[in-house]
Image (cartoon, rainbow, N blue to C red; front, top):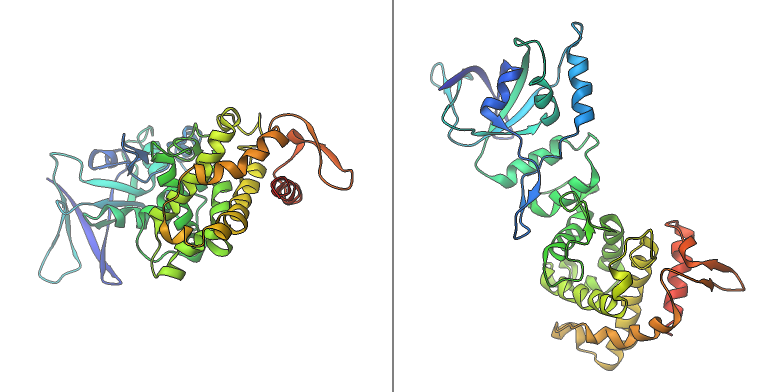
Length: 358
């Protein structure tokens, strides 16, 4: 049993334990739970992928005799770890950690802890703040909130957001539902987006997650997805949203199978401009075509790819997503591959694509 002298601190009814330890010993009782997905696509862990360059910089800094590491390492222990007060109701005591296995996960300080293993100084001490919970969601929540003021990679933040159930800062809240939808679409084997969205756990994806966040958010606030949101129903009908998105983008996939598999450098279909233009086209097709002939279409929630294919078919004859020069109005011509991810180009391209089916 490892025993560390510790002080108990109470914050909002939760207990935090502060103690010190030799830096090189940290990974003997705590591990780094790096974010990943299992074979079923379930999100595991929450830590960013190790950044070798940053770790080397920390080692170089801490090797200087004038350096100090004032920031504490934050560790979450499960309930096998106990705080034993020196006397009843005392805030001073010992944190007891069983030796038989690892019971702690590093919530903040992944790279510092890794760097400490490479220090020549075997006696370098660090401050540790710890909390105890068996709730994985609470671990992820604390990881996100503790790092709220630090530059965490956006793809990592985006993948963690759907897993949290607590109240979030406003900077994150409006991205939570879009990222939940993206997570489902990216891991459903029948989805046209299966493993094609570039995220922290799927770095080989070629469609940018941020592009889809913009598209989905626009539909959630001013488009068809609003009809399935908590603002209309009292709760978000995520299943209906995914079903509709799979139906429309499945039609895009079957209409343009070659371009759908190509990265944005070689086609404008999977490029930000193309994704946002087609997302707007989905709204136009639904409100100006499908709902005019089938008023209960959204209520029935029976969305299939063929619902959209006939409306996308005219595009196949009018646009080559990876080649050609087009007139975008008033004689203004541009090569399609010159379309960039700027507000001006995106708006111009959206109007052009929508105009092709009217």
